[in-house]
Amino acid sequence: MSTVDKVRTISEPIAEELGYDLVDVEYVKEGKHWFLRLYIDKENGVDLDDCALYSERIEEVLDTIQPDPIPHAYYLEVSSPGAERPLKTEKDFQNAVGKYIHLTLHEAVEGESVYEGTLKEWNTDDLVITIKIKTRRKDIVIDTSKIAKARLAIEF
Image (cartoon, rainbow, N blue to C red; front, side, top):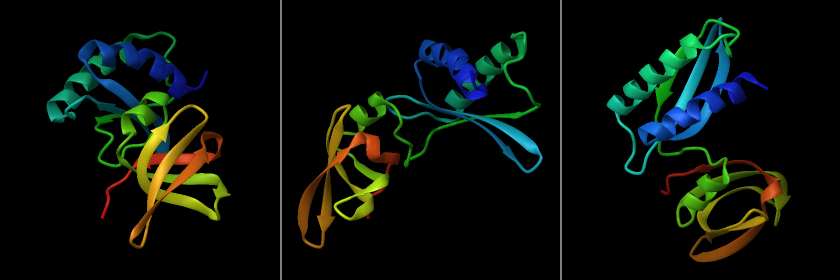
């Protein structure tokens, strides 16, 4: 099991207990330092106090687990996923229906491998995104297996 998976398993129940959704976990090396980043959210968004509370609780738990699930010294960061949060889970996509999203695809659909538009429908097999082409709108059906990355986007 990867470090990210171990931390997610430990962190999700604590997030739920405090009323948060654990959106994402990253364990990355930047320069000579390791960073453990946990992204949390809740219905009306999180603030600095939410991040501090969750950080304290996670730190208490991670410091007591033996053997240590994290192999290196690291900096712990807890934050909001931001306005352009990633969409990774079924729940993320379900919650994004009706919202503006950005998709990067492994394989082109209708000649394009990047789309931005409103997520109209979603199920485990495919999704429908409504894109704007000049003054008209068009629905594109995309097989979910072709999605490399997805995130919420800000519409301009």
